[in-house]
Image 1 (tube, rainbow, N blue to C red):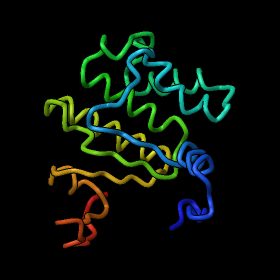
Image 2: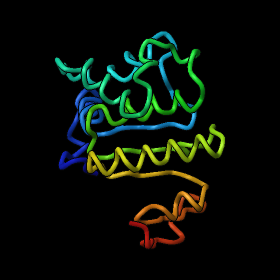
Image 3: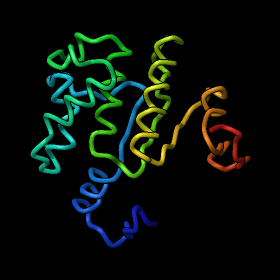
Length: 165
């Protein structure tokens, strides 16, 4: 199996972790923010792990882009669910990943907040040119993508392009 041209079977655990950090982003339903780090620090982590000297500025820019420029020094417990998910969005795009996996990105949000998060997700995706894989039960959200794979029991039951764009 390959990821970004690299044969995963030939890489050791550290090399696979480095490949993921450089090329893959994740957004989780339950945010997965580090509770002891501020919003800014949560977004900066993947960049700092790469040794990016501009980690703070890139993180500040992303937090501003997702509407949290005034909340950068707040901890996750001081942020609403929608704000936490926007921090998670900024963190996921911080390393400019080739592929981003979003697992039920609006599952813990009310409808209005969820729509704002999805708008931001698609905007950042278009801006960064990332391959976006959304795992969802929300058919309305799925229909906004370019392609839908439906799974049942771990097997693909339908594989269809959509009319989205």
